[in-house]
Length: 324
Ligand code: MBD
Ligand code: FE
Image (cartoon, rainbow, N blue to C red; front, top):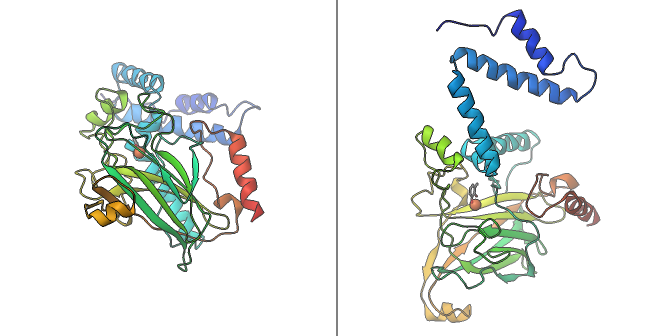
């Protein structure tokens, strides 16, 4: 087929009308972005001779994604989350904000309001029969190596089946989700279970998209972190456990070399007794370095709709940073 209509005055005028350029109301940025988005898509339809069948199957897929609330899952799969990180890294570099533990994507499975503890928390509810005990610990420091006491370390991860509490209704409330405030030496410690990797549900709309690209929907075993402290830059990151088949083949593109951490199996009875555990365990050590900043908006996570979080929570977080 040789039909090409995109560059005709009719189509260009049509795009201006669709984007509301001839209307007084609305939002200028929304209009400009929509105009660009629709122009790119209209041109694509022309260039690839997209058929009626292809177009309407795409509409159907978008409906299915929305119906199953999977846009937040497809987003990292299509690289948007990592691309935003790459841009944020570049923005930080331009502003001479360098150093510290690297960021990586938040993902779609955070839930606000997890129980808070000082220094130590047990994160698992003891109900996962396949859960291997994990001892997860580390120190939060500034870029000069000084410990940061009182830092907030929010941790969330999957169970032995790769499921997250709240989204997986078989788990108890806030299972494997805790906020730990670092002790006087800047340390945090959690007793939990070793997470398994996550897999996009077979046959789900996100899986259909990935399959069409010849890709899989697997993530390696990983542990999510938000780390914040007054006077320091908020950090969103994750660690990927070494040795997982997907450690370097993550469908969500979250792996960074500095964030690959071994889980070391320990069966020395003295070490078991010292932690008051009942058997061998896997130890994971992850130290975090935070850059200093006086800017309140850099001390809190960016706004985004999150489970159980509302705008008021953010307002009080921002107010909290101004105090110290
Ligand atoms: C996850 O656990 C996750 O962290 C991401 C980014 C996507 C899907 C599942
Ligand atoms: Fe995750």
